Amino acid sequence: MARSRRWILALDVGGTNMSGALFKEDGGNPLAVKSRRTPAAEGPEGVVAAGLRLLDDIRDEAVDQGVDPKRIVGAGVGVPGTVEPGRGIVSLAPNLGWRDVPIRDLFQDQLGLPVVVDNDANCAALGEWWVGAGRGSRLMIAATLGTGIGGGIVQEGRVLRGVAGAAGEIGHMTIEMDGRSCQCGNQGCLEAYASGTGIGARAREALRDGAESAIRHMVDSEDQVTAAVVAQAAQEGDMLGRLILRETARYLAAGLASLINVLNPDRIVLAGGVVKTGGLLLDPVREEVRRRAFPASAETCVIAAARDPELAGVRGAALTFQREVLEGHR
Image (cartoon, rainbow, N blue to C red):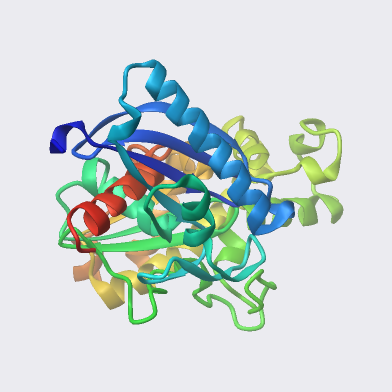
């Protein structure tokens, strides 16, 4: 089968939304990019069913555009949890409430094609290294600020996985002893402060404590106060929104400075909705990192926003399948 004519399905499952697309095995622009909500409350079976429907829709649209279905050779799937290498079992996904879920087999049995599963942040990191803000990097760290905080480390084009496949769990670095409770069961994790969930929670607490803010008038009820609302308020000049983003930047920078001191990367790529605020988050992150990290390491590390955050995860999932199945290595 000609390499240039093989196609790979890709799915990026997040705690709130999932997205997918179809890629040629040599990369390029995707076909049939689609997304939908992640039905997390329905458990692994419900999430898999929704993911399969999305992949079916992608495959149908691609066929309508002239893709031979026999040339679709498999699927790469990114999920927000620790994935056991080679087995496709999610040992822990705190934000989905999963433990020891054989997610690869659940997809593979119903899709009828080979499936490779990896951590979603590993996929996003690989996608950004391939064609995004990490292109050309020798040692890149990616952090995704979504429902939780995921992380991926790419060295010389290969994802650093660790012995149990759990490397890169940036969100579960402890940044405050006996701090806020995290979904993983620990306290003081970076994710509990700087994730979308953590940002929304801190904003709601400030409002309950009587803080004045335009955020009150942007929503109908308290539970609608999300990180996206906070970011919008900050962009519009709201003082509480800006204060929460500055605090978020300090928490995030504390974690990143530690990573810089330990790993000495040349690139850190940040993704997620809050990063779209640009300088409101990135400038104070850079300033605080310079203050906290060793000068030599900080000066040689570029901190940048993801270039292709909407597609990095699905693109990286496709590349993971290509490497593991079509090329026979990770």
